[in-house]
Image (cartoon, rainbow, N blue to C red; front, side, top):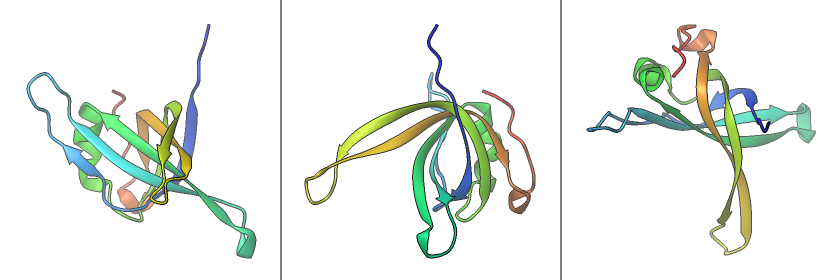
Length: 113
């Protein structure tokens, strides 16, 4: 058996992009969260791209605004890309199936996809 799951808590870097359902495609909300590590001057952040689909995307979209805290759980994969200067980079992409909004986002939990 193979299984990879990630749970991350952080703040949205900006408002989620929402794509309404279209034909046989489910609704989707795409956003990035910043997860802080450490404190003070040595603090760094990891940025995780998140995709949330279906009813969960529809019901939470209005709350997914910049600066709001979220706890997301889903399947994760590493994605390679070329930076603006042409050097290679990598990021994490989380295909979320559960989102819990922080107290600053109406403390509402999405229904799982």
